[in-house]
Image (cartoon, rainbow, N blue to C red; front, top):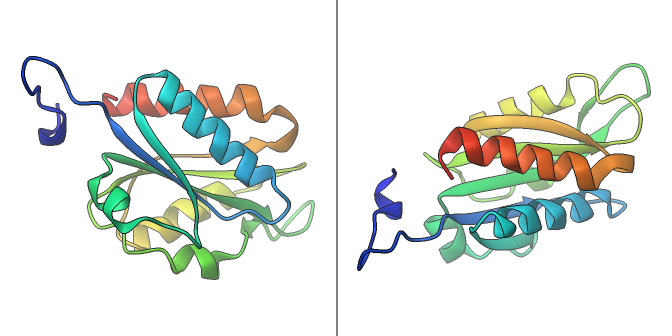
Amino acid sequence: MSPSLEPRNGEPDKLKVVVIHQSRTGNTKRAAELIGGAAEAAGATVAVRPTTNIDMAELADADLVFVGTWVDGLILFGHRPGDSTKVRSIPKLWDKRVAAFMTHAINPGRAAERFAGLLEEHGADVVAFRSLNRRHLESEAAGFVAEVMASTGG
């Protein structure tokens, strides 16, 4: 159990989760909301924020951070994180456990792996990464959250 989750007055604190997203067409925003809802349903305290409206106190206090964007590139090649400039503009994520997520239409290629690398360069301790198909966001987002929270003790 991490120090921030030690019991106070006999009751454990809730896991604090922040979900940060950069969305172009609304799919990644929807995925972020679903991820936040699944984390909240699992008992976490959750804040969902676009990259343009990050609450520094929430981020500093977070036990787990999900960061998302979309897959950019052509159908068969050139897959990369969408608008990585805005993702790089978020505060450094030193020593934060981070789960990277992306949304895609057809083929994500290795974009999620590249996104995880970008976040690691930004100081994150990436514990998981996944690209979610925009047509299956509900089931894929819930499954991703369950896997991440189970693997991180959340």
